[in-house]
Image (cartoon, rainbow, N blue to C red; front, top):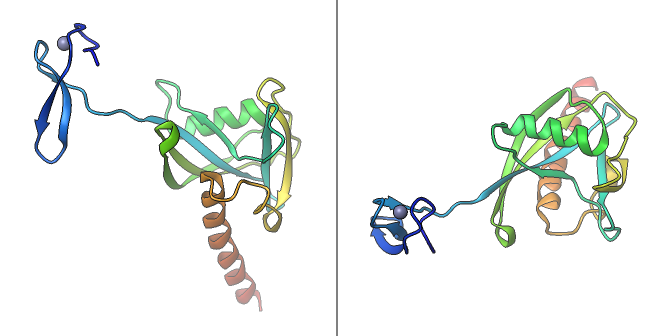
Length: 172
Ligand SMILES: [Zn+2]
């Protein structure tokens, strides 16, 4: 590894509690490991349906909409932009759910629930093969088991189900 400032060879320097961290003697600068940041969104409409997509040329499993943060953008802006780009709907509301570290790609995936009043999906042909709405009960099994999308959706489904159950009890 080389210093991104001056090009010198980096050496390992022991940092308390952090372990050995690459270090440039010339610049007196530590290079802490970096991760990429991306958002992944459960997009729902007012009929309690979830938007699942197939990525271009990937017909095996459906996925949730996800994308990398652009410099200068916050996570909520990224959610709104990616959803608008990929399936052409306006997000009315978005809320943080939880986050999962995707080790294989060194990416922190930040999970959101995004809501829209739009129903017509207009897909971006370059990135998306197809997109459709699925009832909440009809999502698990369409997403790859054990994936981050699957974990995120199962948690959303559990909390949403129990909340809907509570509402029904109040009505009765
Ligand atoms: Zn340097």
